[in-house]
Length: 73
Image (tube, rainbow, N blue to C red; front, side, top):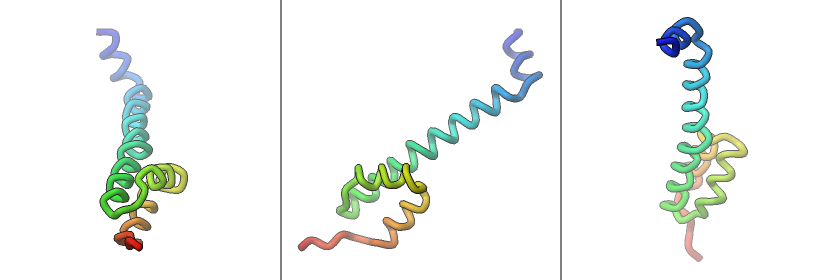
């Protein structure tokens, strides 16, 4: 019962929980999707995963889409 009162009286723990979920999605789920798209387009997935973490996952995904399929030489 005290836990319910604590969570309802102070919104900070709930906010922090939501923030953690969003951060995990932004820094792990979206870069993983970028890596999978890169693999599908014939590019190195790990490089794109790391690139999307260091710059911005959305920008990396848009750049990957703009580059298109990798040509085989």
